[in-house]
Length: 112
Image 1: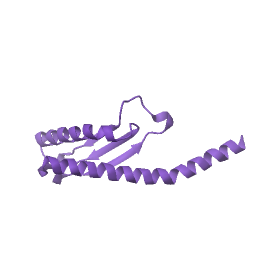
Image 2: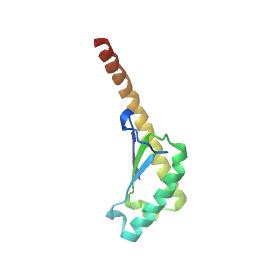
Image 3: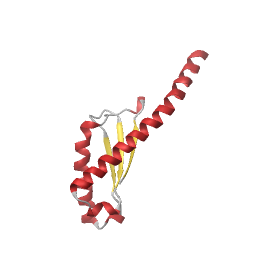
């Protein structure tokens, strides 16, 4: 399970009532029946996660072939783990970007 998170910025913010999820379930997972079953399971888990996430977050979840044989509890645990790891990575990235962005804003304000 691989997850990526993105923070919507300023004018990008859409009028949605919660975080958005994108699912990638490729043919490497299995035939159409297996892919659709996997996608349904992932959607269900993502709905549960909505209440815990910031509404301005976009999450992309990519299913790996090993996921097909996982029990539902293990699948839920893997998805949660991947999403929260990606969120921590996003927070670290945002922390490094934020000072530079505020410095750029301060420099722009000083020149005006």
